[in-house]
Image (cartoon, rainbow, N blue to C red):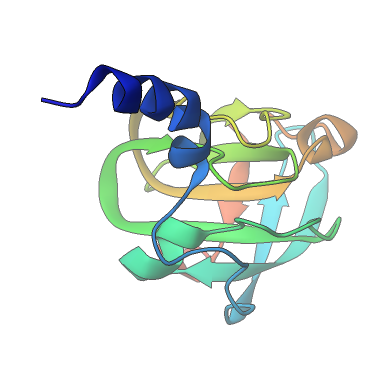
Length: 159
């Protein structure tokens, strides 16, 4: 049992404890990048160069502590096989657009302008092969929507 006085201190510290990630207090070094192309159903094509988050450690840190994301950059989280994906913004200090992508490369769902530092989960709402994080507002600026096609080697459809 925790003494009442200690319990009060713990309650006051919960927000700080929730933001802390053991052993993580800075951005990870830039990961290897690969090309990615999004083809909209309206005929537009948008090229990106994205960091590839492949290992669990890389995926856990993601874009934490990064002050910005380049307009033509981002990070692709490859889950290896389709699964439900749940992301959060813990220690992420810039807003992002999260694109949840099915195994066929089609965008299943987009969570736009996520809230920095939020501990709320952002769910794919169905099985996806990958999650793409882009700078906040990119989806709206480029008119990227669910159903658009992501071309990248992990989907077997690289241009």
